[in-house]
Image 1 (cartoon, rainbow, N blue to C red):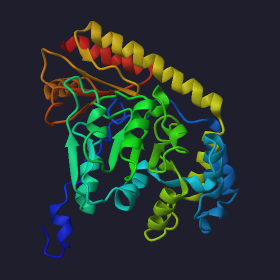
Image 2 (tube, rainbow, N blue to C red; image 1 turned 45 degrees about the vertical axis):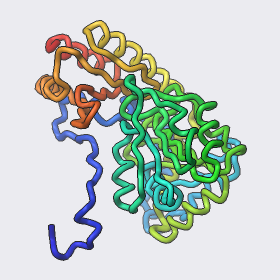
Image 3 (tube, one colour; image 1 turned 30 degrees about the vertical axis):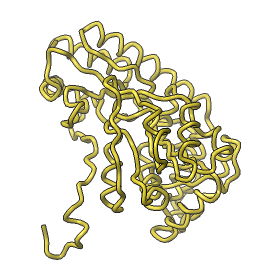
Length: 355
């Protein structure tokens, strides 16, 4: 601790991202990246935006990301003023925590969920309540519809469990908390869950947050966005323009528009991930693992005969990297990103040798 720090810094408990190993020969299944490259149209759009001499880089990007907002709005049946874009969904969510979720009533979210949520609560001084999931890690709708209303954030599908709730349940949660914002974090929704976006017209308090990192293979460009009625989006814009008016650079904006315009490429890579998810789940179950039903691009699994941390270390010794969380309730579990068929086979071979 330095005497030069502001008081808030000393008490922060920063989010710890997944390891980005330097060794090239590892099978990297720990950070939920897409195993397939993005649409070729992305690189073409970036080259076109750069120009022959890269002259475009001397110019600031469009601070409103107008073309990207228009592209997203057209796909969702919304107006451009109902779309907010940011530097990855983490930045979008951070703005939502600061601008929408800080109320007198505590913010509710599951006890097992994206571990950045309590970090943002600490950063922004937001009171929060971690609501226990059921023993099988399912979310109990009644926990968010009964009793006193308040702000809510839910990852759907949830991370790291991969479980999801349906659109009808989200509608009931939004209605039960109509006086407060309800944020649905849909980072993994494209891999099989129902999006809450069609509910926006009926629920002025509903904000849906997404990313292009996973399903569109653009983790390196950092593109996230939010969908909601205009007053919610305006709050995020006001925060952005008080913090950084240019969150998305010219190349990210161009690449994102291109990615969202290539539906065929997106569908092929998504379907390949879903097929590998089923094969990996079946393969792990055959080896004695308990595998939760997942609608994300990862599975959550444990083996009754092995400690979670020890199993992660044993896999690492065999050049397989997965994510282990040393946290209550889930320290026996591993979150395993869905890779290519070859990567999934390598994981299963290593697990077979250990188990």
